[in-house]
Image (cartoon, rainbow, N blue to C red; front, side, top):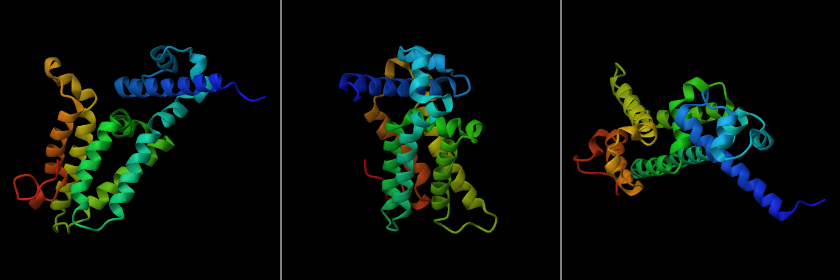
Length: 212
């Protein structure tokens, strides 16, 4: 017997609302400290609804962050498929836009990833991050002592991890009377991440910068 369209729509809406509530909970208090009841309460549903739609907290996490992980993988694939000089500049903008669009998901798989490394979706995200880091750090020959590569690895980690923290937990340090909107955040992040992700001779103040 076919489902009532209104019932189907309601189920889809409930699933999406529960997914978003879970994402907010995971980013705010962590996967380990989040219970299915917390998610249900936040979304305004019964716990049984969470189990009906997702079955487990792990399945809910996968549903919550998969769109962000998939977009990050696509970003990495696009970067690796190019060899032109402009790709690094465009990468800065693409990373900033992805962080803004998926700030909660990125916070979960970057900031909490070490504690969740045994989950397949986290392993998938970690693999994408490592691929991008390796590509960026391999673009120039390292010094004999590895110092230049280490510098690049640290700058990469600060860029992604720092931005992920800033856009979620780090917002608690912002003056509540001067909370920036996304346009202001984007402009500031473009400047900061260009300084961290671009080659030394192409960073702001050295002649070439990203386009804003």
